[in-house]
Length: 408
Image (tube, rainbow, N blue to C red; front, side, top):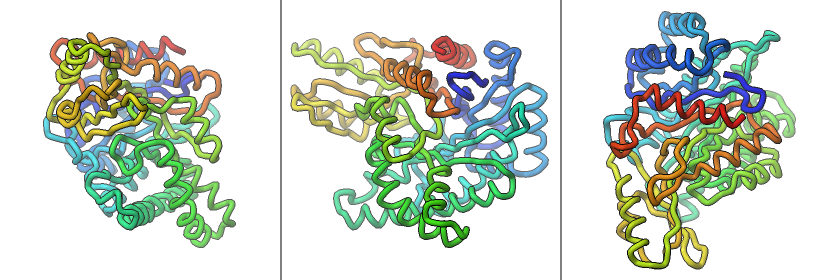
């Protein structure tokens, strides 16, 4: 769906389980026609496509890709963005920190991402003027910092250098694809708690300290560009994936994120509309324990649910997962924010609240100064929510999308 305010709006299909293209396609065939009828009966329906590695290999086969194109056209749908973060199984298995595997130190991550872009270059539609729309693929924050001796400068430099070199290999591929297909596509890095890029400041530091210095030299030489042209090309093809849940967990404010990016000439590739859990702790012991136990109800074994605690002095303490935060809870903690993608249309979860206000602030910023043309709803935790929050999947997606559309 394309709205003047939002740009292209869809939902991310990482909500559906499966690793093969047959699994993915069956889920799309089951859910999309009904959602299209409910949400966009008279206009094309946008999809944020997630492909596991195996599915991407299978979809790239000409017979499968052509069949999918025909299905999209026959059902009035189109793909405008893809989620290239989860590589393998993402449901019905223990994911935890393995969501980062393989990371950007590996050729497997590079090959997978290149393949996704080749597929997207074929799937991207043209607009009413006959011009291909831009497309983006979100990806991991390079790697997971708890795998390394992150306090050691030499270790950080080595990992940043290695991962940046692999990102630049994809950038060069995107530039060649643009020459061949006239499709402008961008890789959207997604800061996440405990990623080696965790915050907007860290994204900017990586961009200015590693990506541009290494990239300008390589891109200018390979493509015969000036340094300025090479820098512009890098900034076009590498952008930030603005995941609202992740921004909120880190106590960042949406307006400040955008102001920082603008100051450095950097861009948002897409917004992932998502919400986290939060709560402030009262002074009384009983009230604090009640909130702690409410968070414990969301302690499930599939995904990482990192917690960032704010202390009385304003310090932010980061915990790798909910069990670690629950064990370390003490009187110095005045607020918790937990990385759990809860339904966006609900603002209160008993004594806990969601970070829905951050979504509303982001949508307001988009309405007043359109900073991206790609937005997708990304709530993937329906299977692991407490039982009283589980609803039919199509009804849940429908409700989330209608909540967003109602804010335009």
